[in-house]
Amino acid sequence: MLRLAPLLVLVGAVAALAACSPPSGEPITLIPGGDSDRGRAAIERIGCGACHTIPGVPGASGVAGPPLIGIGRRTFIAGTLANTPSNMERWLEAPQAVLPGNAMPNMEIDDHDARDVAAYLYTLR
Image 1 (cartoon, rainbow, N blue to C red):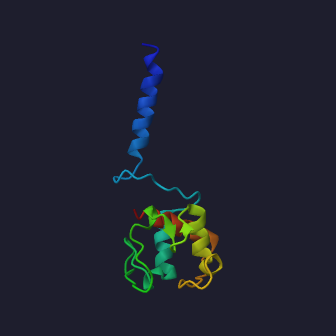
Image 2: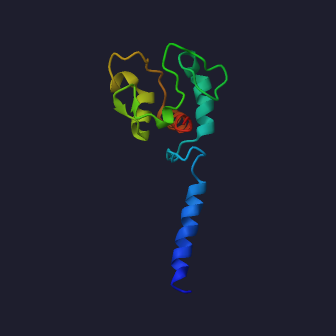
Image 3: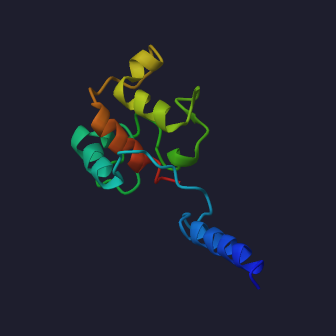
């Protein structure tokens, strides 16, 4: 029985971790220091919905930019940049520095808001 104890602990740990995944079974992307609720509020305040359709954000039904439905599971940001938390934050802060000449304007999003907005965007799976 003592030899089964570690196995039972491992099985319990795996079950607990599985419960932390979203219903789709995809892993949650965590943004250290980011808060998705503050991110949703920042998206409204900054006005991202004027250009993008963003689920869960009232009035965010713009069509000038791509819809952000499922952005959290996409492979790339802007078609070329690997979709990682650090790249998402860089993109939000200075899209013209990351990919000069692209259609997204610099919105002067500070690093705190970028973390929070990225945290929200990664909930969109």
